[in-house]
Structure formats: structure tokens, C-alpha cells
Amino acid sequence: MLRWKGPNRYIRIAYQRIFRRIGTIALFTLTCLLLIAPACQMPPSPVHLKIGTLLPITGDLSQYGTSMQNSAELLVKTVNGCGGVLGQPVVLIAADDQTEPTAGASAMTKLAEVDRVAGVVGAASSAVSSAAVDIAVRNQVVMISPASTSPVFTERSQKGDLQGFWFRTAPPDTFQGEALAQLAQTQGFQTVSLLAVNNDYGNGLLASFIPAFERLDGTIINKAKPVRYPADASVFASEVNAAFNGQPDAALLIAYPETGSLILKTAYQHGLLGGKTKVMATDGLKEAKFAELVGKNSQGQYIAAGLMGIAASAGGPAIADFQRLYTQTYQRPPKIYDPNTWDAAAVLVLAAEAAKANTGSAVKDKIHEIANPPGEAVTDVCKALSLIRQGQKINYQGASGNLDFNAFGDVTGSYDVWAIEPDGSLKVRGAIAVSGQ
View 1 (cartoon, rainbow, N blue to C red):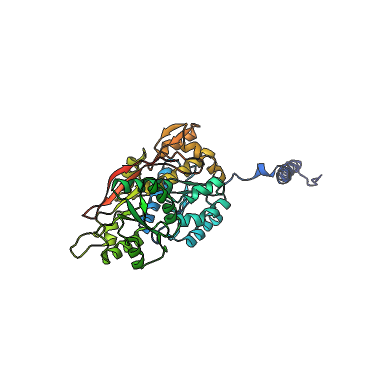
View 2 (cartoon, helix red, strand yellow):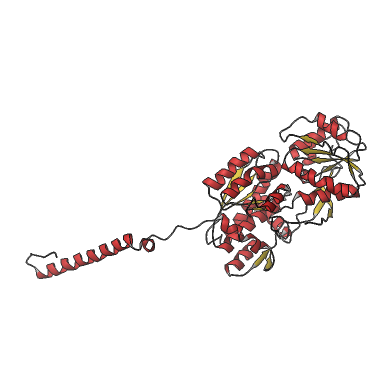
């Protein structure tokens, strides 16, 4: 023990008390370091939910990408305005997939391995999603596509390849092929030729449409050798001549806006439009300004006028509120897959709140719980978050549909029949219901 040798007894007692106090603090510090270190650590930093977007800001689907990105941003802004997730603002990290598989794979790698997101909204192109989904699964990141409709993802989910990390808020092309076949029948088309982009989207739709049309006693005149073109093609003379050869009742065009507009323009320049063979289109061409992309003839008429197509209906219980909010925010109406994008982001944030965690594996396990019955049906995302925080079960009803996911991450839905009017506008003329799975 330290002994005080000074003359003042009171000073000696004071210093002894100080030394005892220092000894007590030192002992506590040593105990913290050696025995109960976790309990002595500083409080953890706030836990943020991080989600990414993998969308086509550039490339062949860029007409949709920016608008889809806006929808995801609007959802996150709305959620952060009512308390965020896990008590903190949601962080949104954007990536441009350039409508190109290699770029999409690189972007997904960054989102998953560098940014460490729990979930990703995207991609739009099925080919890009195919390139990115294995990266997501490997890193246990949930991937919810608003627009990738290839049946390949259903098949891979059935095999267990995707381990429950894949979902989509647009129905697969097994349903769209059925709707296209019904459209052809209602238009009296008995013979159809096929002209499709050579990727997962085009090939998946061909595989769906052919048997559906044949079940309705239709004939595919080039079934043995459908006309396929590379996704990066820019010249289409041989393709359009092959597709119109034999004068079928209709040519089914499976394309994206940029290449699809070039194909129709080429067909017009070769004198193939306006005759016996009509053109049917898929959801990839449902773009409000598509007629402008194709252009006008020498008489000032839109070349694309009369084009008819199919696209998944965006008619969920929350559609009116979404359209109003989107239009007020961006001073323009939403596009075809904007409601699906809003819903994809909503599902991720609601599942994270329900899981009380910000990891992909935890989010994945709660998606069916918050989006499917039973539970209180709710369309407002802020109300849904509030109910979850109160410990209540919910059944989120989206802007794009009811979002009742099956075991393979798919949703069902009906299809709009759309057409290009003489004034170049795109109008929905009706709907076709599909049987589903």
C-alpha cells in the first residue's frame, strides 16, 4: 500500500481516497476487457436496410428504365417519410444494367458484394436477370423483378436452383403466351409467323405461345424455324422478309422499343405493312411513344397505327393511389412496369420490417407472410408498416396486383389488349383473362 509521509493528515486521507477510486476504475476496466467485453462496448450504430435497383437506364429498354427507377425512389421516399424500416431510413443504391447481361452481372456483383444490399429491384430484361440471379443467390440477396417474364425462372425455381431468393411482380410468359393466343383467335388469325429477339425473353415467349396457339387450332407457319434476331442487331431486311413470307394472317413481333421500331420501319420500307399480314406485339413494345419511334409515312400518318398487343394489366387495389402520387411527383403518368417496380420495393421493405432484420435471408423468409393471405388486407405501405410494428399480420395488396406469390415466386394476373391509334396514342381496348397455374 502507498503510504503518505507528508505532514498534513487531511491531505494524506484525500490522496488515499483518490488512489482507491483509481484502483476501482482500473479493476472495472480490466474486467470489461477480459470478462464481459460485449456488455461494455459502445451502443451499435443504426441498422439501415439497404436495397438496390438493377434497371435499364440506358440501352434497348431505357424508355422504361428511368421511369422504373423513379418508382423505386418514390417508394423509398414514401417509406422514409413514415419512419423508415427498423427505425432508420431505407438506403437505395441504383445501378444501370444497360439492358445488357454482362453489364447487369457486373452491377449485381457490386450491389451484392460491395454495397451489401439485402434485396434488389430488377432486372427488367429477362436476359439480364438470368445473368444476375445466380450472383444474387450466391450472396443471399433477394431479387424481385418488376418485368422479367421468361418461364426459365419458374423452371429454375421448381428445380430448387434459386433457393427462394427469386420473386417477380409481373406474371411469367407462360401466361402471356396464352393471352396472345386468345388475342390471335379473337382477331380471326388462323396462321401466324414468328419474329423474336434471340434471348430469354423472346425464346421463352415463343415456347409459351406456340403450344397455346396450336391448342386453339392455329398454325405457326415457321414453327420449325422461327425468325430470330440478335438483341444488338440494327439491320432487319432479311428478318422481316422471312417473317412476312407466305402471307400469314399475322406476324408475332417479340421485341423491345428501339429494335422493334426499326423492325416495323423496315417492314414498311419493304412494302410489307398494310396488306394481308397484320402485326401482333408483346408487352415489350407497350411504350406510349412507340408510334413516334417508328415514325410517319409520306402522308404524315403514323406507320405503327393499328398495331395490337398484349401486356400484363397493372390493376391492383392500390393502382389509383399510386398513379395519383406518381403523377403529382413527376408531372407525368407512370409507364407500363412502374406499378410493378413500386410493389417490388414495397415487398422488400415490408418483409424486412416483419423480419426485424436487414439481411437477404431474413427478408426472403417473410415475403410470403406479408404479401399472401391470411392477414389484414392493406394497400397503403405506411399503414402496412405500422401494422407490422404493432405485431399484426398483413396481406399487402399492391398497385400492380394482389401479389399473391406462389412457391416459385410468381404472381398471376390478367392482360390488357392495347393498340396504337391513328393519332399515335396508345390505348387499352380490353382485357384477357388467363387460367394461370
